[in-house]
Amino acid sequence: MQLRNPPDRWGPISMLLHWAIVALIGWLAWLGLTMVDMPPTPAKINAYALHKSLGLTLLALVAVRLAWRLFAGAPEPVPGMPTWQERIASATHWAMYVLLFAIPLSGWVFNSASGYPLQWFKQFNLPAIAGRTEELAATAIQVHEYGFWLLLLLVLAHAGAAFYHHLFQGDDTLRRMLPSLRRADATPDQTPER
Image (cartoon, rainbow, N blue to C red; front, side, top):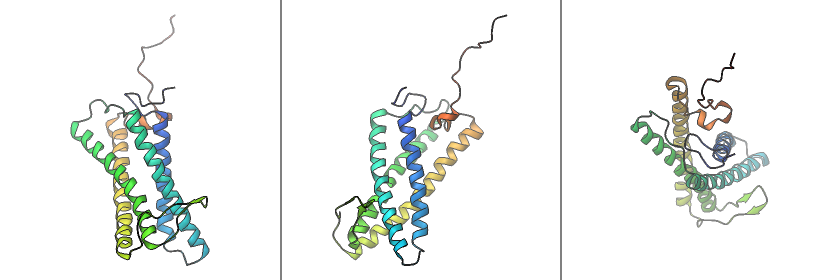
């Protein structure tokens, strides 16, 4: 089994990182949107602590994913894809990487500037990465929130484009990231001889 990305599809490590990050983003989004409306109880404190731990995990996974992509490369564009679509897809991917770093880091800055402790799943403490100031905390939380909505928009566009290619263009854009939906390689007709 080839671990690096072959020219025609994403490899298994890239797929695993992609779908793990998608699942983590979904969990973080749901938790982030629901925890703010919780009553001030220990459950709300635990929800915030979990959100922070998951955000730190996302940050680490995105760093691993970017390093892996730089090492393993990316598949060639799907044959016949117009150049303008390739450019938009590439710009969207890199914008998502920027946001996937900016959102957790802005959360960390907000946490630090607000003077809150930061632990990873109650295993160890992480240091503050900014001094305690209200102005910085206000800016960081805006970056965190607006970054999330922008990421959501880009993820929907990314997924929509993949489904458009799959359903209307009939190409392998989506299949290249789904191991169970891989189109069989073109092989000569192997009908049995009579």
